[in-house]
Length: 456
Image (cartoon, rainbow, N blue to C red):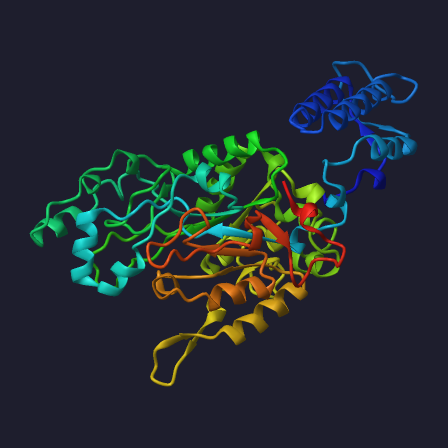
């Protein structure tokens, strides 16, 4: 069912049990509202709704032992609820859409610093890679408290429960004359068939939460405590490739349609369907997700507050995740879609910044990135980009890529250095002016959008 406004629909009553359950759950959520007057009005309106739906004058209810669906012919009640129960205490929530807001996220949000001996070993093997991995993050709750509204989590499948239990890095360090890091001995967290959370097999496995289910539960607890938060994006990278093509690293397990089914079930088991904004919610009655975001657009903030949105970081997930689920029907995660494809609503434009210089080396192409991303967001896509990568911009204190990301209208800007985690070189950070959590999107937001409209 697509996202709807209260004044657009009539009320559907099932039976007394369902009505009571619905109102009880609704009020539990509303009880967190900072505006107690609003909460009280909402509660009163729920009571009215419950009275009407549980009295035979208004609903044709059978016995309590027989479940039958009945309609409450009360179009006027929708108007009453619209007057008495605003969706949140934020006045513009029904006007500003999710893709008209810009937020900051973190790259590899779970990742702790690489272990000392591993870093020394890596410097000898690949100095550039060692430099690229020289960053870290605090706990996920600390990041959310600091204003991050997009998280990235890398996961590995492990159907046997043994694939990653004995990292090879310890032996490599010992061979190089280094004392192996303790965390690279047998790792208890890497045993069992849960999805593993880590960056690089064998060498870069230190995570602030492990396995995936624990990470999700940490996020869910924070969300429960902050029910009016802006939509929270969780970018999942399924790790299926070896980091170096030398044959020495443990080969990651490949994801199959069944693996993706298991992933969907895990996400739903932690958050529940009502707390996740899914592709089905956005598609509504349109034949494809792509047509829906182009013609109707994304849900409003009123619909998205308090919810999480799962996305895939890599295009390699798309074909297998779509198997049996055209246009992501029945799926939980948005693919990193190719613009124009039926499943495309969310896409990443990280590579738009990279071009090739005349000497064959990589260079940042800010002008191309700006044009590419602005074109995508104007078409209705939700876009994630990066303001820095591999510690390059941070070491050089180069803010050009960050500034272009801000101007581009990409709704999600991912960094290794949010305001509360500055780089050790030059104190490089990525933050909006004024230190706000979110701001009106410079490309897609309506002219009437103000900072207060996208606050929490």
